[in-house]
Amino acid sequence: MKVQSIRGTHDILPGSVELWQEIERTARDLFGLYGYAEIRTPVLEETELFARSIGIETDIVRKEMYTIEDSKGKSITLRPEGTAPVVRSYIENGVSSEVPVAKLYYIGPMFRHERPQKGRYRQFHQIGAEVLGSDNPAIEAEVIEMLFRLLQALGLQDFTLLINSVGCPVCRPAYVDRLREELRTRAGELCEECRRRTETNPLRVLDCKVPTCQPAIDQLPAIADWLCPECREHFSLFQKYLKSQEIPATTAPRLVRGLDYYVRTTFEIVSGRLGPTQNALVGGGRYDGLSELIGGPPAKGFGFAMGMERLVLLLSGRADLGAPYKPPAPEIFLVHLDQPAFEHNLGLASELRKAGIFAYVDFEGKSIKSQMRQANRLNARFTCVVGESELQTGQMTLKRMADGSQTTLKRIEIAEYLRKEK
Ligand SMILES: [Zn+2]
Ligand SMILES: [Zn+2]
Image (cartoon, rainbow, N blue to C red; front, side, top):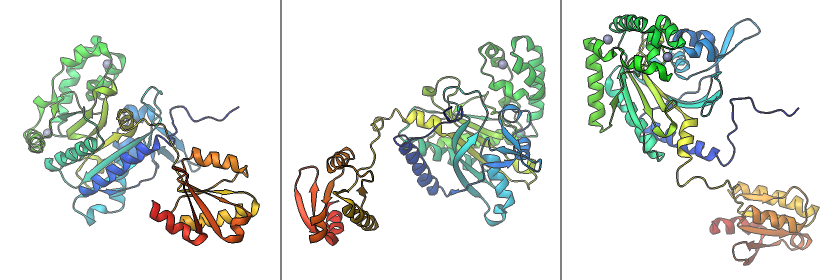
């Protein structure tokens, strides 16, 4: 039986990986301008971290986590998202005592055991950033400005920012009660999942994508009408700062996100080109209570996660991409006629690489003709055929593949010559 990749995972091959690298490079450069430093947390964490932060009533924790027991009976989980690990690390390493406001970003794989479908993976990748230590709505607008700059720098145009406020522990409970009452009276119009969530997590009903639930959901009270004065003020300042950065935003009353730790500002960036049910490219918000949920001191937090697979999907239609993959072209392809020449070429190639030149040696011991064919296929700029006479005289002839012109040089002159020819 042939061993194959696990369902819901995918390989990123040469030809595609260059786009991933470009996205990562662009993000790193841009995030640096805003003062973000990279953080790399382990892929494995205690299950408790996610159970407490994301909430045991969420789909993620209930049925999507890859959880195993280690040999000592401790429950550990492949991280399904990046925020809780970053906050855990921030607390554990005492970052808050070093800097008043910590700006951190991460890039890496996440794991969720979802039913595989188009655009959804069990190992997927996210770029995310977190600001810890500030509850200023201006910093939220700054994060979103940074995201807009990133998406624009990558050549993405048609995307929309959706914003909402999910209130705070002061004002949300009354709204949730009101919502639950309303949902109970509409139970007959709701799917089974919504009826269950009516009791466990009514806010999540607003996320339901089942078409038959939509008319009832559209009639539900909006949280905006239930915000306390502080939440109202926070949200209107956030909108003001967005406006002063000329960032267009659409208020989305149903945008409550699936995770329990969000308070006040939530947002998504969506693209119509991703289709109606999985159109979110970026999701994020404020999570001031998260640190305390996992046993840390109070810490204000705001951040986002962006799905790289979806971004790649959108960008792979970009006009300058889509050329078939070509392996990198050697500066010089060293052809050998016999074993002593092969051994000589290994040494010469090594010297040339030390000088920063991409030198290629054929290892298959094939004929001169097949080596020349290979040099052509790789699009080598120069070839150099080495045999007995070259080894005796120490003179090598470089052939420029583009026009066939030849230059004879001493071995030690080759690096210098190629550098000038670059
Ligand atoms: Zn409030
Ligand atoms: Zn439903």
